[in-house]
Image (cartoon, rainbow, N blue to C red; front, side):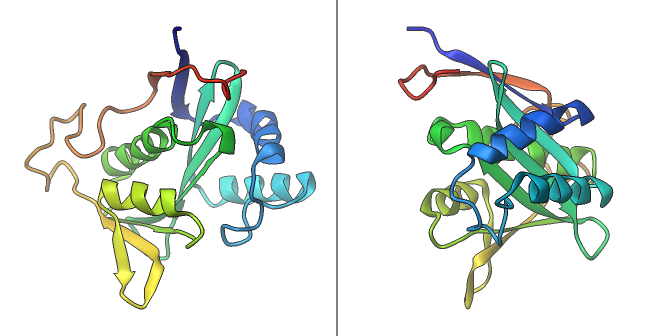
Length: 187
């Protein structure tokens, strides 16, 4: 049985309604530093704030349904950002979260020339911990196992860089991938 096609790309203004629909379905709410918000009004305000601060945003769609959202939010210092990744629970363990994360990191490296990216991971998210560790994130400090960071290797620093196809983060966006068909894919 053939799989479905997932498209990963930068988010655009017209995605707001699809993002609201995705976050209405997202579970568990409030586990990730209180995000995503629990009501549609709060989610809309949160998405506006994320946009207003200049976050780079990315989405993943399977068919016509938006199933994931990632963002690189500017940090307190230049060339730093916080990564946030949200994927609907029915689409986890299919490689979509990793592809979305790598696409966001590729953009952060190549387009934003970031030196450092960090992510906060809840202890109740062992899959997220494995994903970020596999990509190269490491705990910031031994006493804080839930905040992980990655020192970025940019083209001027990375001996493996092939410009378009990054050795560390793969191809740039937009990107498509086949998603294996399984019974949870009803899109």
